[in-house]
Figure 1 (cartoon, rainbow, N blue to C red):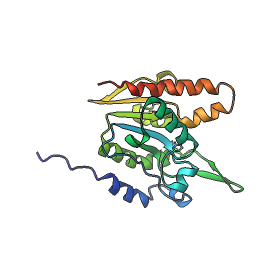
Figure 2 (figure 1 turned 90 degrees about the vertical axis):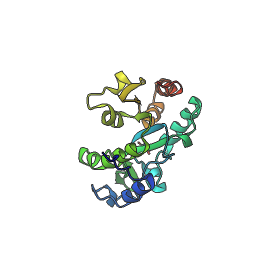
Figure 3 (figure 1 turned 45 degrees about the horizontal axis):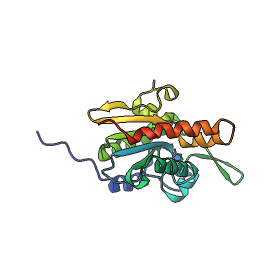
Figure 4 (figure 1 turned 120 degrees about the horizontal axis):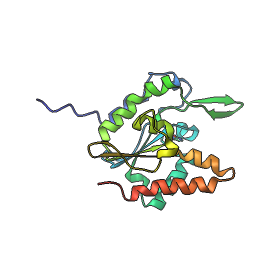
Length: 201
Ligand code: URA
């Protein structure tokens, strides 16, 4: 039997995603925010959806949530440039309030329409470790019944030689930090990501 065809390169996927019309989010967004990182990355991070800054810059996790992620990854000893970072939803969805663009959550149909890109990124990179940031990514990778708050911070076998770990989204930590108890959330987030130091074989 001939070997299965190799999935398209990340550059080819990114180019195709630029003109994706599978849902309506492209209309108001500035651009598609595709994932980035080494094509052979061992670690693959999945966020929720592109935010305001990501929409303007065309890169994932470059706003406040991204800065927190970079900071904690550095504490863990991981260089962001060594990992692949992407989102479930690759367009920014927002509501205009005066001049402000307020983040809105993508609906189920928009998420479903966008999954083709995440699937293709996973198929191409074939990471050994998948890190889900937030409940949307966790439920997609680990199943709808996954309970983030009970099951966060543990390695879970996905497939032969592939593992996943879920934690909260860094935006959740940032929101908590603006109220009381925020430092605890940061500690928990850090503790979850410390598990990346010693992943399963
Ligand atoms: N939140 C996300 O989930 N992804 C980003 O890229 C930025 C903020």
